Length: 276
Image 1 (cartoon, rainbow, N blue to C red):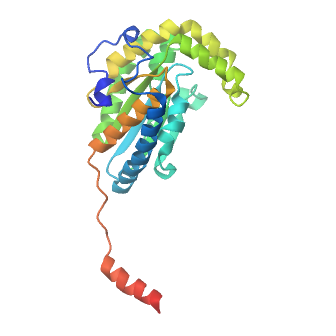
Image 2 (image 1 turned 60 degrees about the vertical axis):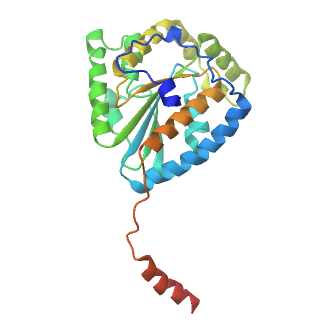
């Protein structure tokens, strides 16, 4: 079975994250074999992205979501970092600036979507406005509850214009999150990533889970599906994401564009001239 089928949230399905094991891995897979596969996939990913860039007919938007410590940066570094920066960009959405907050919640998102031939990765995304906004009540329910429909319409518009969308929830357990926070504290190179706010947010774990379940249930569509990736094992997380991205790129049927010049004439003129 394809990874994209195994982890996809079916449209109309009511998500219950408590039924999904964040420690899940594929049988007969382990860290060592996964590392070899990921290296192979990364080479293939570079080739596919090259074809996407050269053909210039499609684009790919990848949205990464997950609670703190779920591994969004890790996926970007270890999987999506294999792509050529010339045709790839990463954008992280933090607390809206004063200018962003003065516009519709999708205004800052629309400015960052990929052009044809590009891959864009969102580290957090438009979904922050139905997650954080809901949990911390930064806007009333009558506001955030309407945003699912707006997001679906926004994504449908992108797809109609040639943008393919992949949305990943990196699913970890609260125990794994706490362990990763401890690892950051113990590592001088990563201590800068930890803050007291990370621990404070743990108080809202259940509310965030309910918010994610609602968002995934409401916005996993045939044209912009969600994938719930068991992410307690970093190696399996990277393996699953890389495989799904490859499956999507392969499905586009991309081809290199035809040559626009007379190759024989160029060879005749310039290679002959170079021999003199």
